[in-house]
Amino acid sequence: MTARLHHERVAGPAAARWLVLTHGIFGAGTNLRSVARRIVDRRPEWGTVLVDLRGHGRSDLGEPPHDLAACADDLYALVMQLGGVDALAGHSFGGKVVLAARALVRPRQTWILDASPSARSGVSDEANTVIRMLALMERLPREWARRDDFVAAVSADGQPASLAKWLAMNLSPAAGGGFALRLDLAAMRALLADYYERDLWSALEDARFGDVEVVIADRSRTVSDADRARLAHAPPHVHVHLVDAGHWLHVDNPAALVELFAARLP
Image (cartoon, rainbow, N blue to C red; front, side):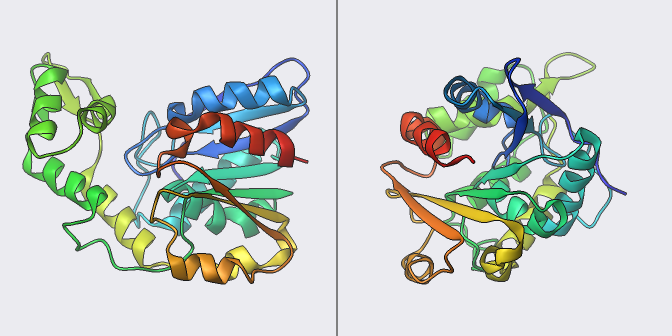
């Protein structure tokens, strides 16, 4: 059973082609809304679809197993509901999801935003910021009287206030008052485990399913030196772009990211 994915269209009246944008772990499609609006302004013949992946935002959790293949099936089901799309894009965790979905959706173009196709260790690495955040949420209460209390608890663990406030977007009003964390943390841990274990170089290097635009945030180490060396010898359908930004490139340097989409969308 696929999960019902919440989605939001950002488009003008001239939109005739569609770009699906997906987010990273613990995020939601709205993380990319500003970028989507600017893409549509620059390329009004394109519309964008902001998607919440399974278990995120306002989407259903779906049935286990919670892995990249399930996320890809969810995305394919949504694309069929939409009547087809021309391009897929994903940031971080979402980058691997769109790679996994390439063969199903068969878009003209796939965008990988600071995501590595490689398998790598990470799910048991407490030095990893994402794993630290997950472990912290597993230790903290599920319900909070105020959002500020959650933000303070995350900040007290040594996380930046901006990251704590972003993570607090996963709090929803609770039935009895206050707020509750809406993330299923066991499902998040399963998704991350598969994300780190799965090697998707074969999906990236398969030329049958359109071009691949790999966008690397140059101040991030998500795409390793070994990844970059392999990308330097990738097949002709793979195009690599460097952006002066950290991992959250859509926040650090949205202008450069929008410029790439404006120039490279078919």
